[in-house]
Structures are given as C-alpha cells and as structure tokens.
Amino acid sequence: MWLVCWAAAEVPVLGVQLPQADWLRADSATVRLTPNTFPNLPVSIRTEMERRGCTVPQPFGSDRRRNVISGHFIDATRTDWAALCSRGKRSVILVFHGNAFRDVDELADTADSDYLQTVPGGRIGFSRGLAVATPAVIRRAPEAGDPKPRSIDHDGIDDAFEGKGSTIFYWTDENWIRLQGSD
Image (tube, rainbow, N blue to C red; front, side, top):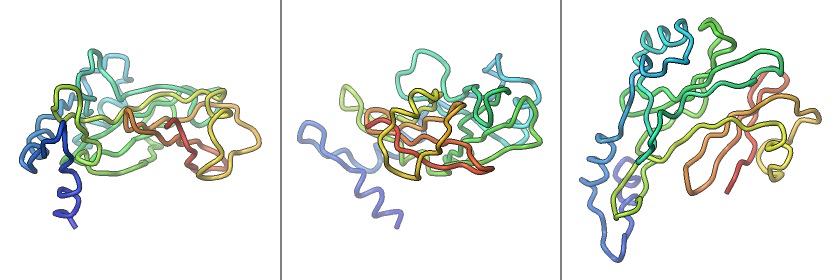
C-alpha cells in the first residue's frame, strides 16, 4: 500500500517526474513548530499539546504561523481552539472545548505526506491549512457530505488541501459532521 501511494505521488512537473526520494525529503523538510511558538494559545492547551508530543506543521512558503485557530466551534458562546498536531509525520486536528484540555476531540488523522504537492518553482511543499469557517460560509457551502443542520449558529473548522479543496467540520447534536468546503 505504501509503495502505491508514493508511486501515485510522482507527478510530472513541466514534463519531468519527481523521484520518490524528493517526496520523502519534502516530507522531512516540512516546517513543524513547537506549541510554545504560538503565544496566543492558552497555557493549558500549549502544555497538553507538548505532553502529547505535538508539533504544528506549516504550509509551504507561509510568512506567518498557521494551523492553530480559535473560534466558536462547539457553540456560539464559548471560544474553542483547534490545532494541527503532527506526531511521527502524521497529523490530526485537535479540538479543545474551551481553554482547557479535559475535552479534546481528534479529527482527520492522516499522513503529512498526503498533503504534499508541487508548488511554484517545481518544488514540493506541505499544503494543509486550518481556518475558521463562519456560519455564513457554512450556509453557502455546496450540499455535499453530511446533511447540513437546520440551524447553523456557530463556526466550523475548514481543513484545506490548499489549492485543491477542503472539508468543513461542524459540531452538531454532540458530534462532528463533515460538510463540503471550497473547491
């Protein structure tokens, strides 16, 4: 299975195949920041991420720290946090209910290499990014994935393969549903 995935990852760039070794190097070269480099992250969450051995992978060429976000993900009255946690070159979205680490959900666990793509200059770069999906964005999202809830009154988490498409995770009826994001 692993060889099949890597073979499929060898795509032509300007008519040239990029060797598997280039994809492996790009995965290793992905910038992964420690939680303490995010000063706005509450200390209790930062400590829990460090305890879990998390680093936060950064999209290729980003000029600012990314993949740690806050929003009203569980309900419209409380601020929650979501962070991409990479361990052993696999990432999962951790969703912290409020400022504590007692209630943490894990979403979309996948290999970091699944989010590599060719980027300008014929190079390979990591291209996964988290963003807040506001209720207005969620209401405008195409009807695909799980059925939309009747009432959309808080934010969702937009998990994007940048330049390709995204999935919106939305909390409703005590669980997460997947909605189609942008294409």
